[in-house]
Length: 371
Image (cartoon, rainbow, N blue to C red):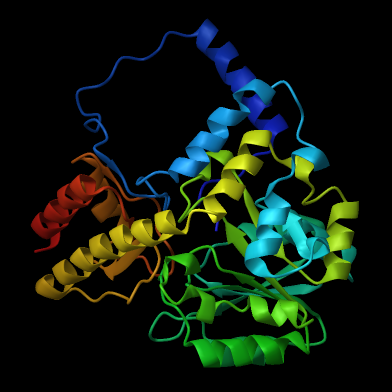
């Protein structure tokens, strides 16, 4: 899944950056105040993977250094063939890029006015936030008592106005993963009634990922889109690259609109992502490191008698018993950034898995604060 900050287009970034630089030229940089937070010791807020990319990905980036003067094009697209090989789909089902926002805008503007998009809340909202300006209507469904996607409640919200159901599995921020057979049957059934988009950004952290993914439904011709990102397990968040597997007509429509073609990415991104898919030893090792650190957090919560979910991504989610802002400020004062709140779960906190030394610092701070 993509991060929790507001996304900007490249043009918006350049424009904003230019304005900021201009402002700096006219004003003095303020000095650090005595009460300012201490230097950041652990950034555990955006579900990044600080264990770093595959060595093959890094080498692929270095190999592209002589080609940086060239635009990405179909000839430079080594990623699509790599996805075809690993996903067992045809190239015309693959849509490249971190496309969730573009997908939301496309579906909202391309369908009937007022089309409804159902999602679980609190949840990762990049896609549903994008549909509103394009005329889409967002229908939020609360998580169930276990903080999982409430499949029965979601099904009850589907009407003739429903344009799509958007599901994140494992869910963000709770980290809960739906039981495989139940979830697959639900997605299959719902796809007979409407489009189903399944964001599997964190599913690759699961050892049985191949059994849990619903990509088989897309391969079978169901009305299901599966999204993956290289910004989580593969540690390529800085390259902003992912992909979706989609029904052929939708994939063609998106590409016709300029969404998901190789030209929307960079040569280093294409090369690094393709190399990452070919390094399964890296996947196994990184997954084990994340699970080991995540288990240490869960042991801490159990020891402190703090309620927590059975989070399966590269983050944990637990009940603090205090307002999120209070906890976040207290941890930031110790140099630990845990990011934003997830209302209405305002007394819960999500903490990303960092490096072992970062996690140890954060666990000690949480134990001191909540113990």
